[in-house]
Amino acid sequence: MTLKEYRNIFTTSLSQLYPNTEINTFLVILIDEFLDLKPVDLVVKSDFKINQQNLTDLNNALDRLKKEEPIQYIIGHTEFFGYSFLVNKNTLIPRPETEELVAWIIEEINNNNTYKNKNISILDIGTGTGCIPISLAKELPNATISAIDVSEEALKIAKKNALANKVNINFIERDILNTSNLDDNYDIIISNPPYVRNLEKVEINNNVLENEPHLALFVEDNNPLIFYNKIADLALHHLTNNGSLFFEINQYLGKETIALLKSKHYKTIELRKDIFKNDRILKANL
Image (cartoon, rainbow, N blue to C red; front, side, top):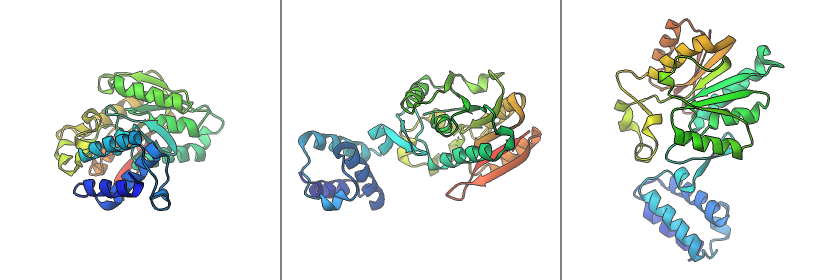
């Protein structure tokens, strides 16, 4: 079968589930993964003959897309902050909004005289794939970075990602909600914890709802800031002088999250919008 023929089959098969732009993106990713072809090759190599093994791989991927499985889980990896990360159903798929959080932390460190010529200590809570601490380790080679997650399976992936990206992260398996003290003091504490309320599930696409780990996504409607409350309390005792607390937050709960931090006497609280103009990332100092 030629690439042109397969493109027609692929597009028709998914046309009732996804917009054409997304279908084309899927195909571009898959031909790169299985055929080592680039987007332009859909045009200039439209007569490319797909062998049987590659056709089987493509059709398996197509079947999984029909079930609305995320493309990142199908190919087993994704890109975040310019680096490659393994993903599976035990980890959330890293989002572009979280890249903005990483960029802000790097900006804070590079522009803060407190951190000049200092070995910075960083803790990430709820690390998942390890995308936040690993990206920071790549960009901040003098930082000492630890990362916590409650999921043993997620930490297996995070450790593989650290190894593949050639960085050293101290990974810790721990339930942060049942943690009374952290292991050390840190200049920066970061968390992108579960923050989607059950009532917001109606807004979540099936590919996320039916595939990504609910443990890392959802909180109860009656206590949506449970992780922020706990982490903010721990940070009160484990942030160094002039240290910073960074959160990714629920876009609908910006005011509530700020109020929570103010009640604990955090100062200079700054809330930023993400690329989609939603309240998303927050920094606070003691």
